[in-house]
Amino acid sequence: MSATHKTSIRFYEIDLLRFLSAVMVVLFHYIYVSKRDDMTPPLEFHRYIDWGHYLYVGINFFFIISGFVILMSARDRQPGAFFISRVVRLMPAYWFCVVATSIAIIVFNQPGITVALDQFFANLTMAHIGLGYDHIDTAYWTLWLELKFYAVIWLLCLLGWLKHIAHLLLVTLIASIAALSTPYAEQFDRFGNMFIYAFPHWWGYFACGCTFYLIHRDGFLPYYRLLLGLSLIFVLLQAAVFGKIMAGWFSEPFNPWVLAGSNLLFFAFFCVIVFAKNNPLRRKSFLYLGVLTYPLYLLHQYIGYLWLTYMSDKVDHELLLWGTLAGMLLMAVFVYRFIEKPLAPHLKRWLKKRVRSPGGQGQGAG
Image 1 (spheres, rainbow, N blue to C red):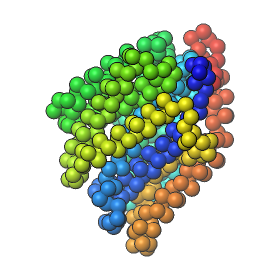
Image 2: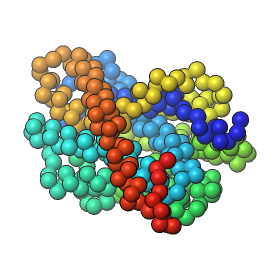
Image 3: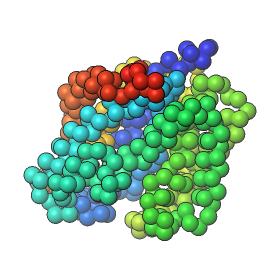
Image 4: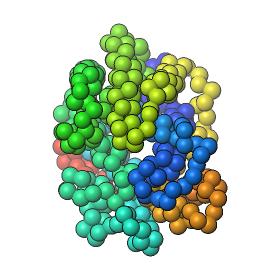
């Protein structure tokens, strides 16, 4: 199979994984974080509370998927084209969800969840943390990390260094594993945002996803075998270290074997995606789940908390949990169908007229 043909594959099973990861994060926030952070009244989810705190690993899976998909998206692209593709993919839904979340915060007027006008406008840039403003919705923390990853890939495109990506992945994985092996890896506050927003806890997941893409593109070369082995070591080590951190935050034990097993299962599934020529889960219908993932993630946390609080004394809590999840999925359908899909082509055309390549010609998003 030629490399050109390989890169044209649509991995519908990744859409399924992306959707399942998003649902895991949503349930983690509703079942566990909302109560532990006093964002909602004491909602009783007895049947789920013993395992609900392990669902946070969906975030890890997101970052692996992102590493794979973004490197695949950047292939053979000029910097301007890559920039346009990311803006078109991210911003229409994000702008709508920032507005929707802000309106919900104002309407429900719940103590502890607020928004200021300058904070609102800063959040519209998605770079608000860099501007000194807090997230309107704490779920946005992953977007700030994603932006940094995109910036690195864009810079590699600009400098023509994307061909050296394998060596950069090697350095990233070795450095991440070394740092995670020190006591400092558990001290998030010691170095501020450096640890929680990038190194060493998250960059390794992006590197893992990039490694999977390189194996798909070029085959299982000896150098990539080394990268894959380091990726596996990183995933298991980070899961163990971050489990200790989470246990400290939430005063709840996180069984390291459960964390290792869940991450190993995802890692194994991704190996199947990369190595199997015919994957039975490569079904086009999963695309319809994949497109809901981004708006679901953007909408679910604070709007969900506000709704859970408002309805907590009106509806059975278990029914409220699954009804809220269903409602968020319907909102995600709306965002995709009436915001993302119609606005993306217009935004793409507008950007193509203004984003110039180094040679001065407009650069399409491809």
